[in-house]
Length: 109
Length: 114
Image (cartoon, rainbow over the protein chains, first blue to last red):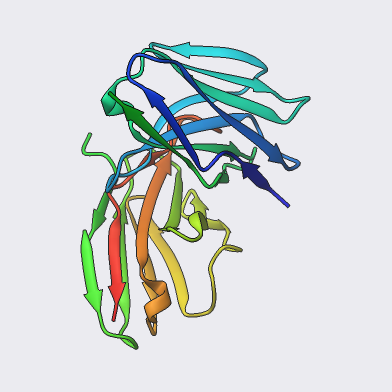
């Protein structure tokens, strides 16, 4: 089967760095994506790692190790507006995207 | 671009009634996905289409659910008859940038079945 595991909750203070891990068990995943969802909103695309290594986009970075079936999302210089749920997702080469259960990030002042 | 457009935004219906959710994907996107989100089950993929053809409907919970994509700019998800356990937020998403990139979600339809 296909599944992605991530912590349910993470708390950090404003200005800090936080890492959200994601491990997956599957065959056929074609990289790892990350999405952000604020309360009452729709998931929005953050990043996609097709290959091993680190991808950086502003304050956010994402890492993938396909041999370890592991990835993480790194958020730097946390801001209050970063409080949201973060989902890792595995896209198959047929276009199907399966989501993890999501990690709720609470940023405190 | 107006993004992925879903209607209605909110739907309250009585158990046993038929419910139809609508989605207009981003023009040029060749993949369309229907997801359901609940606190208990998270984001579940129900069905997805490629070039208007259903590719995988293994996530559709039961025969009460059906989805169609008659053309590249419109899709529907129908529940008949609806039950209280169908209450959830239903998202439509589209993609056209290749595997993994830029899946764009609509604002969702919050369905309440009483």
